[in-house]
Length: 116
Image (tube, one colour):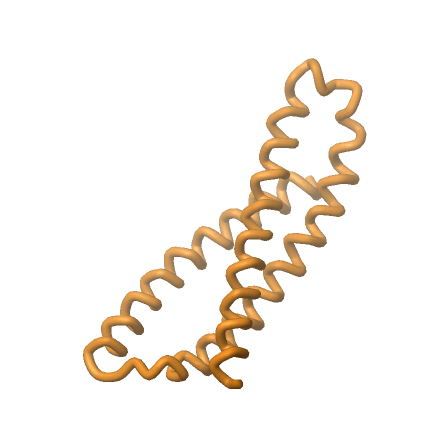
């Protein structure tokens, strides 16, 4: 049962990450399109829509963090030991350092688009 819950947690973590990326892409496209003359009449709709999608962003980030903590605690469920565990931990640290910067920059960009 623990293994199934661990897999479900990893799935939810990945879906939340994809949802965050999707909201970033959507807000970026809306921001770019509003600058074009074809969208001039709809420009007043973009800010409220962006604010609503920021809720998707915040919920996604909370889910990512919470499920990430669970993943951190349960990583030994899959039985990694020795060099595999050491190398995997090293790679996970590098991955999360890079993704941390990407998530901070992406979320800052979304906040700038939606609220300012």
